[in-house]
Length: 285
Image (cartoon, rainbow, N blue to C red; front, top):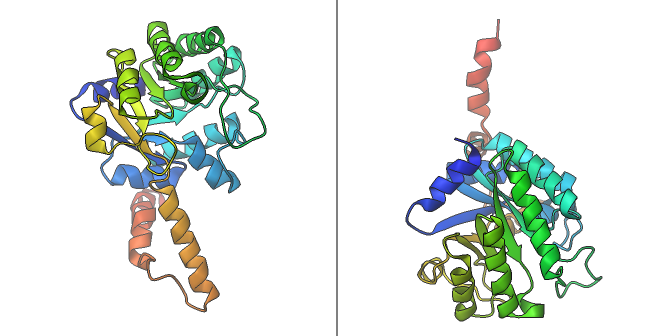
C-alpha cells in the first residue's frame, strides 16, 4: 500500500485521530516511538526550528521538503500529513509541491487558499477568489494521482469572508476531489458543525491548541462535533523551547545541565547509539 492508501485506511477506522505537530527527524522519531501512527509536519514548527521566527510565509518549498525528508528518514513508518502551505505559488507551483511531497513519501499534503505574498502584517489572511482557489485544488488533486498522496484542502477565508463562503469553499473542495478538509479559525462550535457538514464524508481536520482567536475544542468535544483529526502545533514545540531555555539558564548559572535533562544513558537510547553499534557490527572485519 502507498502512504496515501495507508492514511485513507487509517482515517476510515473509528475514533478521533490526533496528529502531533512535528518539524524534523527527532520530533518524528519520538512521535513514532510514543505510539502515534500519524503526524502533521507543521509549517509553523518548521519556521520556528529553521528560522527561529514566526509562521508568516517566511519559509519556502525547499525548507519544508528538507524537513519532510528528515522526518521520513527518522520515522519511515509514520504517516505524515505535510504542510504545503499555499503551494508556494500558482497552480503549477502547487502541482510541483504535491508531486514532490508524494514522491518523498508523504501520506497527505495541505494546500490552502491564502493569498500570497501576504500583506506586511501579522494579522489577517486575505484569500484567493473562489474560482482561483478551485483551480489550485484541482491542480493539487491532478498531481496527487501520480503517487496517491491525499490532498487536504484548507480555507482561511472565514475571518474575512464569513462562514457561508467558507462552507461553500469546503463543499467545492470535496467536489474537486480533496480527501480531507480544514476550516481555519472557526468562531464557535456551530461554525465547526457547518464545516463538518460541508465536508460530507471527507474527514475534517482542526487545530485544537487553545489560547488563539478561534474555537479550540477538547479532543472529546472535537469528536462529538464530527471532526476526525486534530493537531496541536505548539504541543511539542513549546515544551522543546522551554527545555532549551532551561538548559541555557542552567549553563549560564554554572550548572552542567537543567534539572529536567535526560540522564546520559536515556539520551543515548533515544538517539539510537546502541542500535547503531548493533547494526555496524556486520561491517566490522
